Image (cartoon, rainbow, N blue to C red; front, side):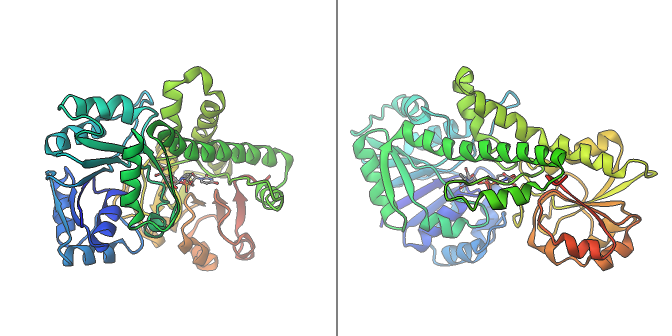
Length: 417
Ligand code: SAJ
């Protein structure tokens, strides 16, 4: 079995490294954060993902997975580091570049380098290949290079890691074929070969497709509110058509992918990305739109208090990166509306977290921002007793509004007029 070195032990790198280890590969997981390395070597995890803890424990126990802060020689190097964006909405490729520079001196003849991180089009060809070239490494002669973008959905990572189809873009044909041979060992989905720039663009367009469609749904929500109808009902009925797949509105698009990746295309082709840019603008305006709703709901109440339910970027995960809740809370602070936060999935957050009871105590409006399953099982009759005013604002259409109304709540829902 080949030796694998996975650079980056985050939401993609750690599940990938531990899954490879449990498939019999010798895996070294590398992360610059020594605390993370320590946690993993002790069989622990630093992120929440269903099934991951058991998998990491099994991988560490078998001796097939080890974590370290420095890379070591291997047959295959997988780069799974973050590609955040700067304040100017430009891709920050510093992690990819430093990963490449760290592994370059370790590469020996026939090694394969795979970039899994989502990257702007041309990253393999224009950034990685030149870096390796500066270390005297020649494609085909000394090493192979391919882009195989990760496509897993947080919350379903372990299942999707194995079952999803994969697109593999080689810097040349041989690189694509070498990478395909490797993925075939553990992937049950289909594998499609192409060139590296196409693979980069495929990944970006998958997320951009979603962003544009979410923007359309958010636009629909605004229209329905004015029309006095429910966007959710329009979506449900329109989606019965075999060729329609309207997405859902919400308080904003968060996460490290959909709110970020479209910018990697816009950055390169600003004049040709009108729909993509407008969609970003619409989705980015949703937190402000949500706050405007909250303001209207609590208008006239003396020193109102909001109970915020869920601060992750979507339901049933612990990830708060780029979450619309961050913008909403910062806006509430600016306009001086009191708030408390309850999130059963989040342990650490930029703002103070409260217990369920604390969050609802004396509140004038409960605002659901993330559709965690737990919120469907809340008891509005009990919760109502803690509140000063029994009002619910559901931005995700995720609880039984009749039940809340029966308990005396006035219910508002985003997208419903
Ligand atoms: N959202 C809506 N309405 C929708 C769908 C999503 O408002 O109809 C919001 C969510 O609430 C969330 C954000 O969009 O704030 C993104 O959520 P998501 O579930 O659509 O996507 P991510 O960011 O968790 O994962 C995406 C996935 N890409 C696609 O489905 C095309 C995943 O497969 C990728 O691997 C991941 O990006 C990535 O890493 O790029």
